[in-house]
Length: 155
Image (cartoon, rainbow, N blue to C red; front, top):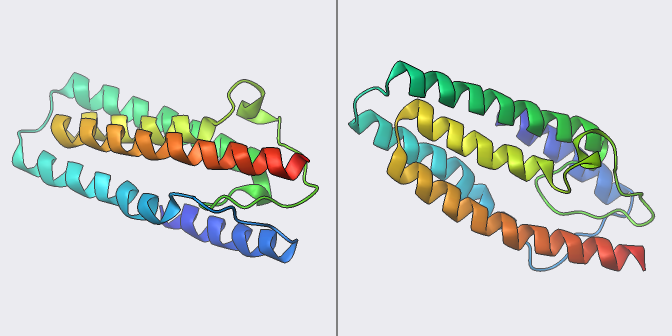
């Protein structure tokens, strides 16, 4: 998370320097608490339960690794345009390389996979489902903000 935060911060500064605009209505202030909060809640629940079966642990680790790989493929494909915030640089072209050739928002697929994989590895079914549902709802709202901003920038 720290590597991602540093990269996002540097990219955010660069986008703002190029005239990047942050649209109104973003749920980032909630997401920045909910994402680490979901992991923290899962760790607490996992601490209170027995260690998951080896097969569940391996499945969770595999899912987490696959999700993290997809997320980093998306991050690297976006390059300097990837940030935690929605910032649209006027005149910038929509990225259609990497996983964006097949999925409109692969980063968010990766985030949900990270949460699901962690929940399995840690043995946190209740907070895992709650975290995925909550963050999924935030992602749906976030995508609406992103799509609106991209439509407005294309005009």
